[in-house]
Every structure is written in C-alpha cells, then in structure tokens.
Amino acid sequence: MIKRRVEINIDGLIGPTHHFGGLGVGNVASIGSRHRISNPKAAALEGLAKMELLSSLGSPQYYLPPPSRPNWQFLNDCGFSGERGDILKRCHEQSPSLLSAAYSSAFMWTANAATVAPSSDTTDGCLHVVPANLCSNLHRGQEAIERRKQLQRLLSPLLSAQVHTSLPAVMPLRDEGAANHMRLCSRDGTRGVHLFVYGGGVGMKTSGFVARQSELASRSVASALKLDPNDCIFIEQCSQAIDAGVFHNDVIATSHQNAIFFHELAFVDSEKTIASIRSKFESKTGEELIAIRVSDRDFSMAEAVRTYVFNSQLASDGEGGMSLVCPDACRDSALLAPLLESWVRDPSNPIQKIHFVALAESMANGGGPACLRLRMTLTPNECESLNQRFRIDAARLEELRSTVERWYPEQVRQDDLLRLDFAELAEECESRLRNQQ
Image 1 (cartoon, rainbow, N blue to C red):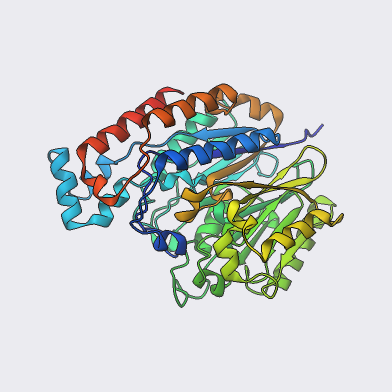
Image 2 (image 1 turned 90 degrees about the vertical axis):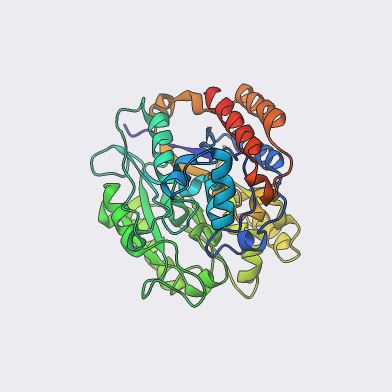
C-alpha cells in the first residue's frame, strides 16, 4: 500500500552577521539596499515567527543553524592570512566586497541549498538531494560544502537518503537549487512531475543580468536525482523577467501539489509551456492541474518583483484547501490586495486563506517566505526518521528566540565588519546555536 506523503519545510536561521552587502547578482532589492544599516536580531525573529506560523498550519518544520561567519578559511583561501584583526583590515582595504562575502548570511535562503527528489519519484526508490554549487555569486559558493554537511546530519538516520556532492562549480553548470525547481504532484503526494526552470537558453546573458541557472545544470541535477526523464520538463525563463529582477524562478512562480501559480511572463511561450505541463501532469497523476495565471495587464512584472507575491508559500491547510503565506508588502499593494481577495472568494481556487508575514529584513536583501525554506516530500516513516535535533517545536522556538534576543546585534553597518570584537561576538553566537542541537 502506498502511503500518503507529507511535505516538510526546512528553513535557514538568519545569522548574526546579516547585513546589506548588495552582492546579489540580478537581485534588485539586494542592490538597492546596499550598505543600509541592518538589524540581524529583527531578521532572525521574523524568520522564527514565519517558521512558527507554518508549523501551526500543520507543516512539519525544521531548521538549519547559521554556518560560522566570518568564514576565515574562505579569506585564507583568497590570500588573506595572519592575525585576524589584520586580515579584516587588509581585506577591507583591498577588496571590501570579498570581506562582505566572508560575513554573508545569505545561507538564510534555504531554497537555494539543494534540489530534492522524494523516494516515490526516483528510479531506485531512494530520497536524493543535490546541494547547489551557487557559483554565480561571490558570496554564496562557500555555502555548498557547509549545506551538504548539514543536510547529511539531518538525513543521516534515514538510510535510504543520498546527499550528493554539488555539480562542479563552473559557470556552464551554475546551479541555484530548489529556487528553480517545482514539483507538481497528486494530492496524496505519491506521484510527481518535476519542473526545472533555467535562464539564458541562447547565451549566458540577457540584456541586463546573467541568468543564474543554466539548462545544463538543470538537466545534470535531474540525472543525479535519478528521476525518470519522462517525469521532467525543462522550461526556459523569459529574459524579460530576468531583466526585471527575477533572478530565480521562485520570484515569479510557485507550486504546491496540483496547483501552479505564475505570472504570464515567467516562461518563454507561457501558454505552450502550461499546456505541456498540464498534459504530463494529468497523464501521470490522473488529477486536474490547477493553473493560476496572473496577467501582466492586471499585475505588472515590476509590482510582482516589488511585492514578492510569487515568493509566497503555498501550504495545505489540513481541510483540503491551501493557505498562501505572503510577505507584508502584498497587503500594502493596492493592485494585489483585491486580487488576493478574489482568489479566496473563488470556489474553484484552492487558496482558501491568506496569511501575511513580516519579513522586512529578508525582503530588503531580496528574499521572501519561499526563499527561506527548502521543501522535502517524505513518507511519515521517513519524516520520523529524520534527525529530530533540527525539528522546530515550542521548546526549540523558545530556546532559539532566547539566544537571538541575548546575542544578536540590533544594528550592523559596513564598518562593523572591520571590528574583530564584532567577528568574535558573531562566532560566539553561532557556536551557541550549533550547541543547541
């Protein structure tokens, strides 16, 4: 008997060195916030509140603690050695963006951590995970090894799980994880179709930004995940979307179970793409695909990027419907608010409830609710077999909030990155968070 699957969320806890370095390639929010004063304490508490909400909706919630920052090994590998205070000073003088990268808390956006295929979809019946190499960005490539180790710890009790190495970190194989991957599945989660979205099909560049997911990487990841090629669809992003600041697919489209929610300019030849997805999905599952299309006339690409509505999280509500977890910016949009209300009133639309979350710090750096989480679809037994030290419950939330309140700074300026005492405070905080596991 095939058991119903459950979707879990794994969020990255925002670190104490969260700052606005403006390093995100093609990320207009990140670039626009460059060198603003950040508030790591507020950022982490916002992230924890979002985890608590998803847990209350019935989604099993896990988290990954912050890796150590500043990353001294990263700085050593880049040619900076000696006394730590001197390293900070010389790196700032010679390459301030490199110093910012060494302090980066971009690992908070766990959607980029990996791409996952559940055991029900793979040819060998194992859960497969491919950590992303994130080689498109100076500050993110260092995360690949860190995240692989954490995911191995999370999944280590699950003997059938395989955490692969990342693809080689070269630009033709640039991979940014689940932010460019969607799994559509039957309502019980047992039969799935995988959508891999890539940019720059003709050349590496659009007219404005470098496309951060390559077709070759998407196809290589699908192969490593041991997916049946007949269950995969490879979709090219519209260059107009990339130029508007859609650096990942999850800024302009999302999905959950049998529903896909997208802007009409998300994909090249959108109508043909959705028709192909519908045909494959309905053939695979025997269920109807619900495609929620938002037209550019009703809601512009610029407003989509500003509000991050497509970076909302779709989640089952336990009553046969879905909830949409949106950034606060969506509530404040005069164009979007009535659109959201119409979805809830429409009996044919599976979205029955809207929840708004405050994520001002993450949003200012270019990441909404869906950026902060990695999804895995598991059997109940697989879920129970995970390393429960990563599980979020009331006691763990209280413990994490207490540490954040006690140790996290309320302001970080670029000049703080030069201070050895700031680096030491961050390391102490991160050590305490890791020890809580």
